Image (cartoon, rainbow, N blue to C red):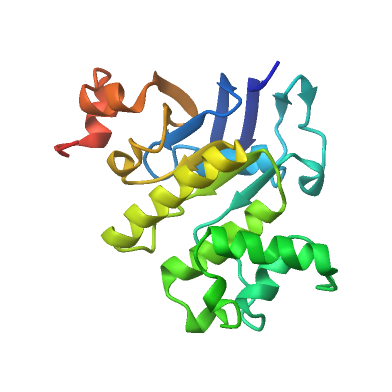
Length: 237
């Protein structure tokens, strides 16, 4: 089974509950859509192991992973705020993806250089986070995530702090790296129309449940469910 299978995944905390089931094929690119508090970040945190489900299963390629600690799961979760260390250069922030000690050998140095070149920031390798733009910091964080070589990439509002031009650049970059590294992608965004060209699947969440599921182009251009129509409002998609 080359897929991510969520079976009756259930989580409860402080009046909020999430319960859903779905199957996402390996190599798919899924857009998570929903209002703030709908459960998008909660779902990503459950997948990453930062939250534990009350019940249910998370199965990747036929293997249950819901009991594994975060560092043992075949995925990387990248948050909007990058999680870069301000006292480390771009190079060393990326190197952390390989060695927390930063003591990398020649082969590992080649890998770091290669990934920095792929995301277009090798020339900025000696700069510190405060010397980089928002888009450049996001590329550093993405490079570190790719260096871990996990097949699942989870992105929580990766485009949030970026301007329109940089958002398009980041979407193009994500499409390129997903193809090259054969990644299964799940991302959240409050601007779903921007991610239509990147994604091939969409989940619309409301109060911790999947309300609509299908092709982003179809669901966003011709929404039929009243809750999805209300969420999209009068946007021109």
